Image 1 (spheres, rainbow, N blue to C red):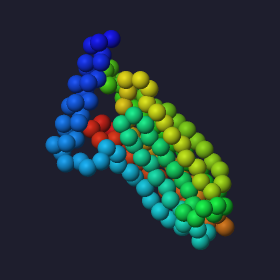
Image 2 (tube, helix red, strand yellow):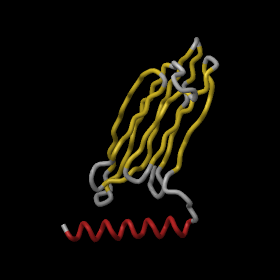
Image 3 (cartoon, helix red, strand yellow):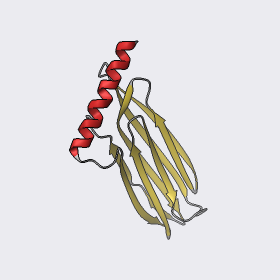
Image 4 (cartoon, one colour):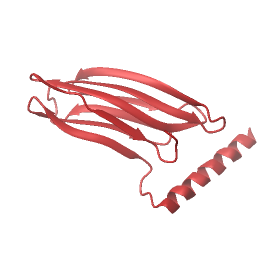
Length: 138
């Protein structure tokens, strides 16, 4: 058990040093887009953090009445074994929807890929967002 903690601390320390030396200013990157459907603005985005990720499809005006959905695949890797895994979620609703993921123990994020749909007043928009977490292989 102690060896696992030491390995985790060393991994985190190497990660922090690498990020500090690379000049990266944030620990997450966002892949997002904005558009318009049926005259209403829409925001879509996927965000990957070290241990979790989320995806959103929403109208930019509160209670816009858009039909929104998001289908996302979250990929992660075990920091000790190198084995990859994934999780999938789908959600639809009115005004906006969001899904979130948390990596299993001893794992960190690799990427999130999301397929968004926004419909309103006869208009349809189907963007795709993709976000890779830094220092991972996608």
